[in-house]
Image 1 (cartoon, rainbow, N blue to C red):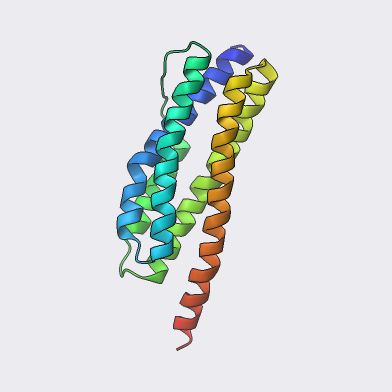
Image 2: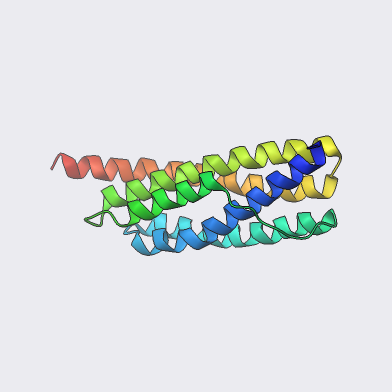
Amino acid sequence: MNLHELFVEKLQEVAGAEKLLVAGLPALINASSDAELQAALAEHLKQTETQVTRIADVHASLRLKPKSRTCKPMAALVADGAKAALAKPAGEIRDLAMLGAAQRVEYFEIAVYLSTISLAKTLGYGDATNLLVENLLEEQKAADHLKKISKSLLERAQDEAFK
């Protein structure tokens, strides 16, 4: 395997990861009882759909056939989120479980984009790098937003626990 082949493999994995997330986010959106969390997840779903398109654009920029590869870590993270969405009863605790799953997804995506961008830069794939950086910046912003929501939900859950 050479550097280009490694990049293509990682690009296919990130494509697969984002497609899994598009399929998994609606369950979290529907299960959330917190309006701010629900809105953040819905916004991230829209961003993820755009990111899937950008990844296809990366393929096109390099004259590669758009292809995705199963991303086992993302499949496990999405399954974790789905499990959290089924927790009973609905409320802050379930929202916190889903939020934790969503945060793990964001940090995984950030790591994947950072390594894929490094490969693209090293190979001199400027257009690919720029498109992947756009996705990375959205992931970082989403992670920061979820962190803020987490603080708010934790405070409410704590207040509820001491009533």
